[in-house]
Length: 284
Image (cartoon, rainbow, N blue to C red; front, side, top):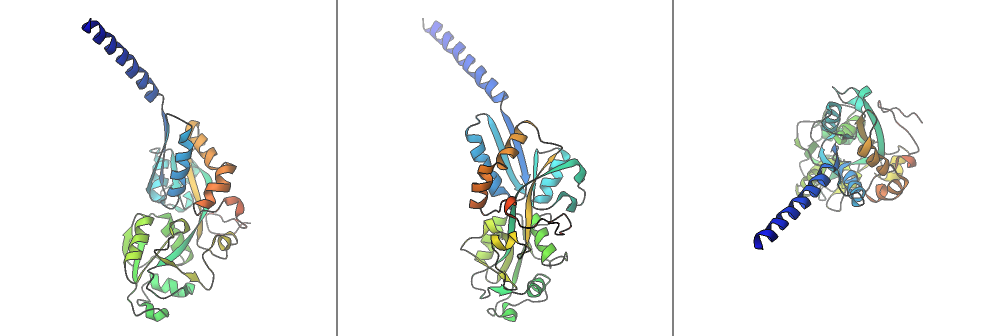
């Protein structure tokens, strides 16, 4: 009798495992890689998207805009998240990629709270990152050496900052970090430190800088009075299909655009009063 029961249990367990295996096999997934500035939005939307879709997953990773563009072009991932246009990335064939603009993000200089400065001219900020101004006392702050922290090469945030503040010149050699969150933490902990992050990464741990008296606000971004901003692109290789298309449609839906996008520190594209092309020209 015990053998018979054991046999029946084994059969039943095998059937259950077989059913689970079929469910797992039928699961779908999408992988989105790239911009760390865009990552918080994509991760949050992915969590909501998956709630009513058992067996369907969206894997979100950082790595920087350059990585996202390179990997989506190679077919290694479904979506490449980027703060820069594909046309701006060397080695990327933009004609292979389809651009889905899901938001706009402002980028601001951030400083350690003990620096004692709240406004710089663009020229002063540029000279700091070019190594021509080396002490905060030179721009009205404390007698403290300036410590520059950059995002890593390939970062869309860095590319945007250097484009609009350094006029495409390269910052002096400095410590580099892949993660926007780590940049903020290091600036918070390091006397005299300065860097730059997306608005969505700003916390009370650091101070932000106005430039020529203009504050880094969403309103000033929408009118281009604050020029350090970029579109948040989600690129696909060709037109998206299946779950990738579903996910992109979801992130572009009115519900997400009118609620989550703003709540997480981004700006819906629909709120922009201007439009820029890949060369930075205002076209509207």
